[in-house]
Image (cartoon, rainbow, N blue to C red; front, side, top):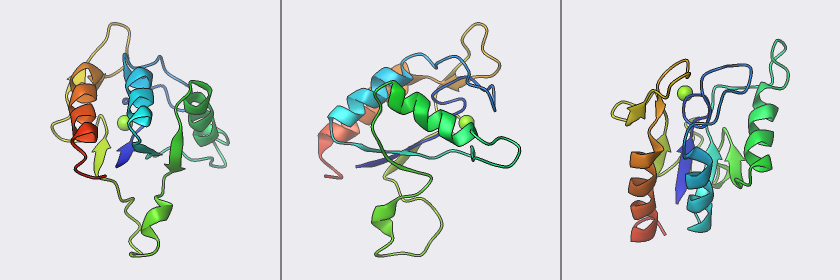
Length: 133
Ligand SMILES: [Mg+2]
């Protein structure tokens, strides 16, 4: 199961290009989803641009340093055999900007972020359903 996961507002608070505080539960749930065989694709607007040379690398290092295994970053190599579409293929996407995504606004956070206490169990049940292999 491919799971596209945004970074700022989903895994950490919005502090681009810096690293925000961790969104409660995000790392715990991502590692748990790894354990179910979910292929986590970091799907973020961050890039290593001329102005923010390590913004994307920092996000990847943050996740890997915290034990999250990434299948890919801003792409799904598995789709290249059947489509030339630039949209990253995933079975679901977790993104604080997605319509309907449950949000919380922890004290001290700049903006609302993903409510993993709601998202985590729902995605877990989808992983366990075997619906997407
Ligand atoms: Mg976001």
